[in-house]
Length: 284
Image 1 (cartoon, helix red, strand yellow):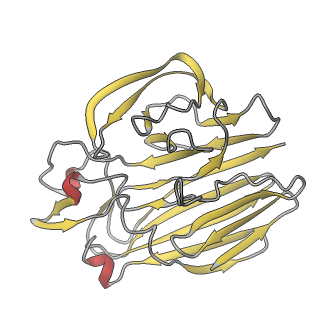
Image 2 (cartoon, one colour):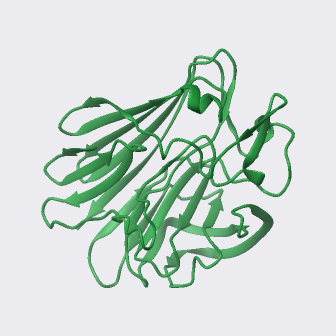
């Protein structure tokens, strides 16, 4: 099922499956800014990544001496979410732990995903709630895909010197860093820029990046707030780009003794919570 909210500028839709954003449409121009999930290219649109980003080594991890199997990008994106609240310009969805999740991720949790329209922007807030009596370890990330064309470009708020974290065909970090920006702020989307999978950046000075084009006036200003890593990805040559704020990162080939030792893992104590957000502002 899809629920919609709108204001005078924008109308957005969210699917209950995975609380996945499925449309960002301008009311003045009719432009659709979100990738529409062509299954012949990539069927996703804006999956939510929890409690892991990417893959864990061999799709398995250990916690407190027990081994668990974890699918790529975790368990949230393929489960139905419950609509908690709906107004004209805001809606919030939730998923809660159950017997199925406990067999994969042994924590009692609740996640709220809030969508709100603020002027010409969409703000999405993720809140992870630990309902357990022990510390919970997790990662969380967003994966929205915006329509674009080859030759469009991304402009960071500030000049950056950034290396991408190389990942291999198994979606695992190799330990190598490859230079992308050297005191510059512009990345052109070419047909082969993602041949080796995503660009993954950490330690950015900028708090936002803007998707722009020389062929049209529309822009998307994407605020990734205080994310630990920013992933940028698309199927090579496809007409979209994913801007992915991550609070966490995919595994390397180094085996960890316990999930609590995972690189960039987050933790929250019993009966506490963690919130993060991203925001996309449309300029026409």
